[in-house]
Image 1 (tube, helix red, strand yellow):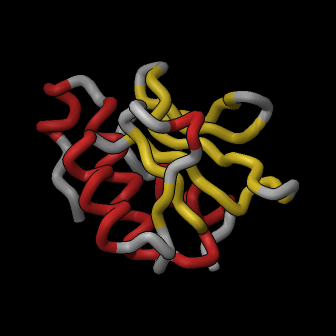
Image 2 (cartoon, rainbow, N blue to C red):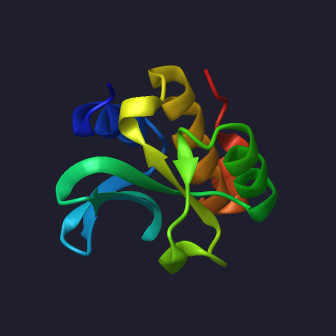
Length: 116
């Protein structure tokens, strides 16, 4: 299962990504814009990750992998998905973080990033 350390390693490998906090939990931002943060779910901190996603990606992820991706009423209408860390493979997590970073990064910065 990916952990905060896994999320941190993937997120901070992205250009100009920085660790911060949001609602008292670890968060990751690019030039001050939040692209991912840990969220408490069921009393356990760090088992769910909120990642930015455009509405098209959000819809597809929720439909194709409901065991991994979900929303709570609070997040309906927001461009993001919630990720069950216990259900996601590390490579898919990395790809989700890259997509979230691209969604939030300035266009020129995002265009300059060549994904490995």
